[in-house]
Structures are given as C-alpha cells and as structure tokens.
Image (cartoon, rainbow, N blue to C red; front, side, top):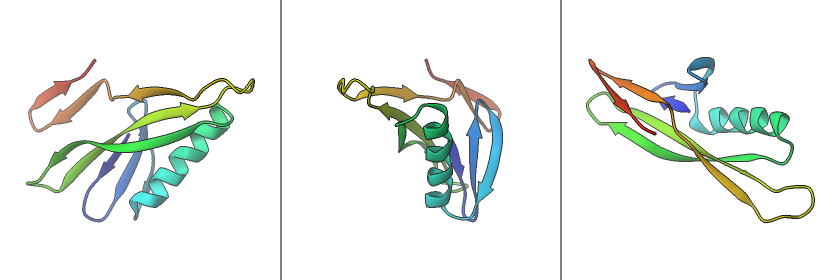
Length: 94
C-alpha cells in the first residue's frame, strides 16, 4: 500500500512503513522490486483505493500479477489493506 500526500509517498507492507519517497513513481518502483524479489516474475499494478480531498491524502492499493514458470496464464490477486484508519473512524475491507 502507498499513502500519498503532497510531498511524500509512504510505502507500507503489512502495516509497517518500508520507506518514504518524494515521488509516487519511486515508491511504486521499490514496491515492484520487493514483489519481484519475493515472487520472481511478479509485478504490482497500483490503483487509487481511497482519496481524502481535505488533506490531499491518497491511498493506493496493489494488484499482484505474475506468470507461472510453466507458461500458465497471468494470475491476479487484489491486495487491500485490512483497515485504513481515517480520522477517528476505521474503514475496513474484506
């Protein structure tokens, strides 16, 4: 997951901050390196999961894509944060 604000993009894995980047592209590139090191041939496709316009906060979720070595078709898995804390409430997704 990537939390983007005006001047920083935080890359999070399992709720833990991995690093902060000045550009979204750099955060996505690092996330793809991690995914490919974990699952060879894997890539992540990021999409806007949530946007709060009052604070310019955007939360991007990833779809994990990879091709099995035997040449099987591409497999996709949507990855959502278990809970996204917004203000005083919590928005949970399955």
